[in-house]
View 1: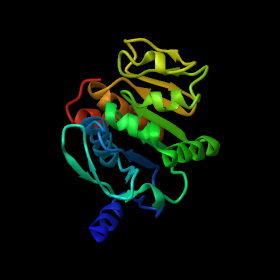
View 2: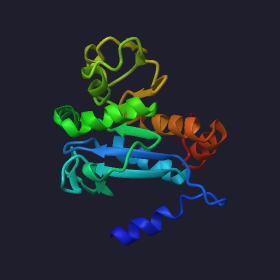
View 3: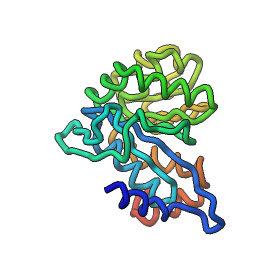
Length: 203
């Protein structure tokens, strides 16, 4: 399995030998599968390296709808900040993220390094609970707005909110919008539009 993963990642290298942007996805038991894997799929289609990491010592992580996913690695094996940290939602998954000291440590590492901190659905409340969204524009799953502590909620018409290091999105139904916004920021709007057309998605 490890050899397969290494070989697969070789595809995400520039012709000049430079790797493209890298995104780390933290998977906690109870994560929402579509919110996690739709962005992983689209980002990899765009040529962006994506590493999924279990927040426990077990690489096998069970999603909220009992779909098991084998993460690429575990949180203790991450080797410093990538360009983007992504937290998928799901109520149980979000609560597990909030309860993990390792997750908080990784978030602070990305924050201090000036890297992007992103989340979807209920997961933006992880940043809210840590007090990181004060004065920031942000969004989340409906009904969780009060947990975006100190943030300026962008309203129900905004599927993806971007403010500095923070990129947040509303839920499963906005997963494609969220992924395309990351591609737009990390590569270009042209690349995001090209990919949207390829997957027959009307922006």
